[in-house]
Amino acid sequence: MERNQKLPADQPTYFTLNAPPSLLPVKKYSDISGLPAPYVDPHSKLRYANVEEYASMQHMPSDIINGYLTLRGYTSAVG
Image (cartoon, rainbow, N blue to C red; front, top):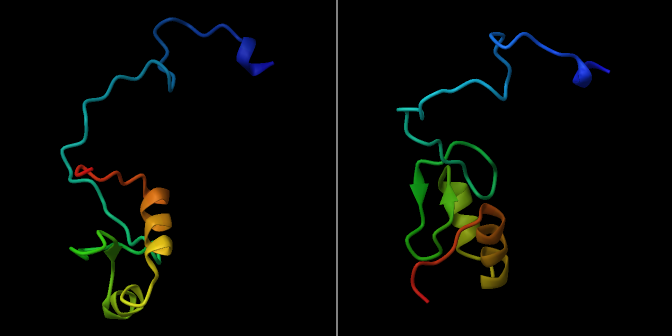
């Protein structure tokens, strides 16, 4: 019912708001825990938040690492 209501043309909605892109840097989160991740493993490209996560990443098989990267939407620039 509410979808069919006619709104005044000058009333803003979620679909009519125009906002510039954010000037803040994109937040990056750990692929393992979801915590804010200031670090990236150069070998596996996984993001991690602390030493414990890094230690657990060192023992992960490559198919698990690829699964985490796929979930994040990471695509390798090198073939």
